[in-house]
Image (cartoon, rainbow, N blue to C red):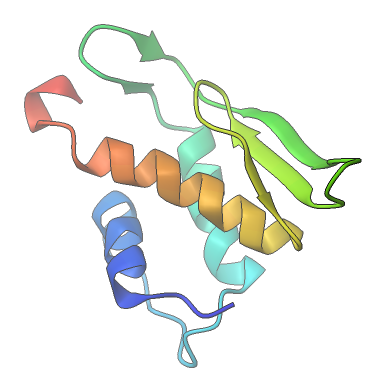
Length: 106
């Protein structure tokens, strides 16, 4: 799976400095540090805070579609044919939400 530059910018906003994969391919060695930081970050919208988020669903198979499912707590359920692709979708949903909150709500 190729990563779009605008998707990578969302990751950079959250991570600080992180190198874009040379060939643009999504790889676990690029995604895992992001997931680990997500697990260690307190998230909230200024009203409700989650001390540390976690996967509510990780790697389960949808029996109807055969797709792999991943979901962070309090976020939507994502499906894709591969674990890395569906994990990336879940990460992007969370980071897009987080990065667009006003700074006084973080």
